[in-house]
Image (cartoon, rainbow, N blue to C red):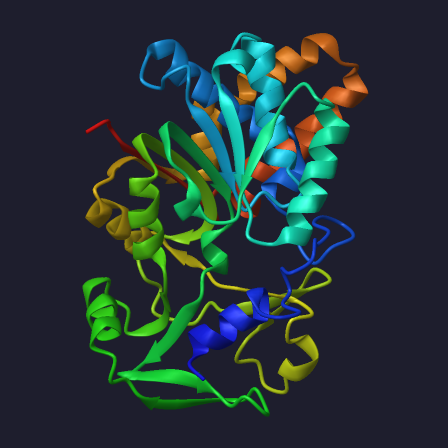
Length: 334
């Protein structure tokens, strides 16, 4: 099978890694910005609030998280929006796009625990199900989990279904060749699905905005980044002696996001690129440090320092600060 089929099966197939709810953080296989601190979600919500005040985002917007894990990020955003302006809870709607029924169940339980019956959140199994007037999408680390093809010297990788070993065959996929050529990828991953995702999102509302964070670069690195995370250890896919059969579906498989390709897909779909920036620059612009200063006024010194250390994870250049990027796009009403 082609590598993209293998990748998709690993994460989303029967008994795939993401079929069931996965713990993120110290007890899981990896950390995310959401698991580091709820100030991440507050910062994004603060940017949304600033845009609402400026009139560029409507007050009756539907805030939608894609790939919400347990629902922490969306709930953190809702909490901050309520702090900024409680009336937004009446004008806004909230939703989650989550394909796995078992994960949806966990999300609903957490949201109920957090807000009781005060906040209603609609669940969608697929982006194509959404049809609203105004949509504001937020996603953290979803594009690194899109299936990809591996290309190298006009060849592509295929996987033996019995041994899970890879081999290289001539690439006769003209569309794949064209995408690799357009984005300058001679060796590495070519994501599958960016174009369809952007086109689908474009059709979901008359006014669409989207903020997403992920790790990667704007330009191709022309090397393989596909790797496996297990218990906070990283295993390059091409590492000699790697026991793929043991890790298959029992660990996370991921790749760096080629943001040049991602932005191209959204522009082709009709979106305008608003901002592309390092995570640290984006969060500071969103108001992260202002939120921290406000927190300092109502917290103990110990609590403040604890949050400060967590925030450092998000913004230090040697940690997530420059490794992670933020992309913001929009579609105005037509």
